[in-house]
Length: 221
Image 1 (tube, helix red, strand yellow):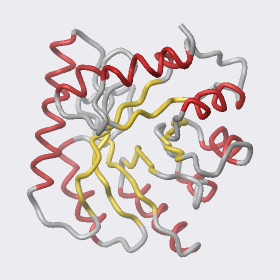
Image 2 (image 1 turned 60 degrees about the vertical axis):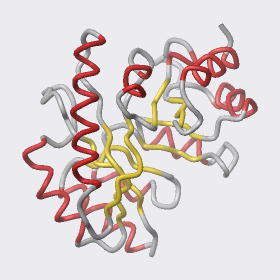
Image 3 (image 1 turned 90 degrees about the vertical axis):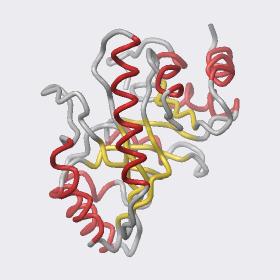
Image 4 (image 1 turned 90 degrees about the horizontal axis):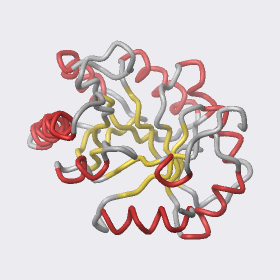
């Protein structure tokens, strides 16, 4: 199927209030331009360098999402370029984002990434450390939290849905409370293989790569 056919198929499977992020990592500018021409404006990248390179070559009304692990020494490169950081997972990273955005008198909008399955191979904060991070976020002046993100463990549809349910419950619990700098607007979960289950359980932002662009070519960056 073509990129356009894939996008139309996914959009037919999700409601209008769910944001579709086209995950364009390793994909060349020409392919992103094709998706842009179809109307996609939200694109996701895993690596800072790749995002910055593409930012300079593509239309400025694209909303770039940093969905991969963000190293502290790379934060300075994304100031003013990223619509939403999906991978805030520690107080140390929070402090660096606050520092770099303060230096430019800018505001960072971020999601807290939760490692809901406690997988060693994945980044994200463990649930027992979430409260401490929330409190640290309240003290910031240049970081605003807009919601949560998760990558759930691979498994059956039923096991995925169980993790998505847990995330939605955490999201709702935080939403009921009053915080400075923290609102629960975005629940980013669901990828090519499980976005439909994620949406069923309350996700309002899905990150789809191979389901739009086909398999990734890691030799063609």
